[in-house]
Length: 416
Image (tube, rainbow, N blue to C red; front, side, top):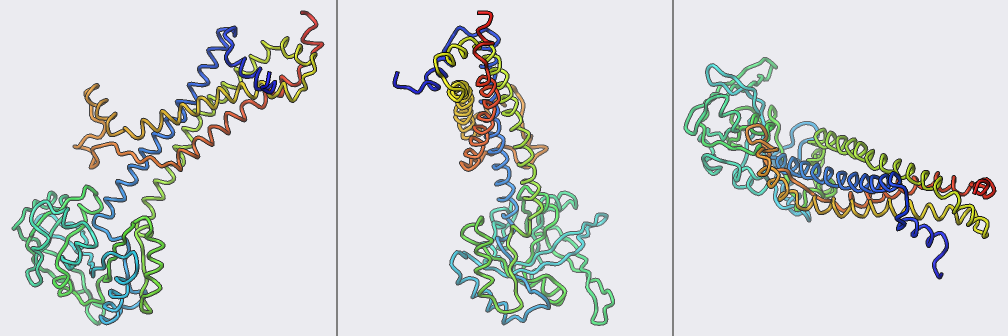
């Protein structure tokens, strides 16, 4: 007697067991649809977040968090040393290392591959990238100045049939002071092979000591600069701006979000479209709530007429059916969030169990570099998914409640 009338009657209708079978069936289907839709949305977005993180880690394994490059003409050596010291003193910067890159042709008869030759300082490079841990044959320390040694990617080694100790000829396109092409050939010894599990690196990169690369061409004909590693890769844009403020004139900073913008823009679009598609499951369940409530309103016309006769206002009648719809929809949302969070947090356990039970592998090692299904649950995603589902299920109650409020008592009781 102390409950408001709409809440009391609405909860009573939810608990009532005298509904027709079809109405009860639609009720359970609606609740299950909301639950499954919300859970699927949470799990799928968590898995996509996991793949995004895996891709980011692999991209950054051999790429720095930011690059310092010359804005126009090449800067003098003094400016680079000044930039290295200034960038290293910025809070949030862990390491700075020099590099130089050339586009060359790797030749080993009868094959020829266009590759990127990257000159590095091995001790400094270990603080900026994870190249040392990616070397599967040989050691990064074997790159000594004046030895003409290279470390090649796994895919390059397979295509050219290279093993440690083989020789590899590099064709370097250069131009004379007059602008005439003057290609150079230089033989290098394969000192190691690396693999990071990313085609962009394994099939295109060669590492050599930076002094050996500088000896191939004038500095002005290569892409040179400094690589920077931050304490937090996700804060790269903000930290890059701090570094930019302390650099000498003529130098600029490019962070990894600019270098790989196309990758992550594509992932962002895929996540958005997937979220919209899966949200349709919740929308269909919301339509089921509409159908269920309309049938309940039709079934309860007599009850509505009696309540109106006893003085219940149309607003209170609306509240009854809004309460019934919200309880069903929001219960489905709560169950879906609980199920989705549980599955997303245990993907690394559930997926192997399913693979063992059904005798198949989702991420076949012969096809994919990534052999497990990663998951990264973000509570911001859970919050907006839950809020969107609550909004859809709330909107689903409006039309049936308005229809109930318009029920005329005299018409409903005419044949009773």
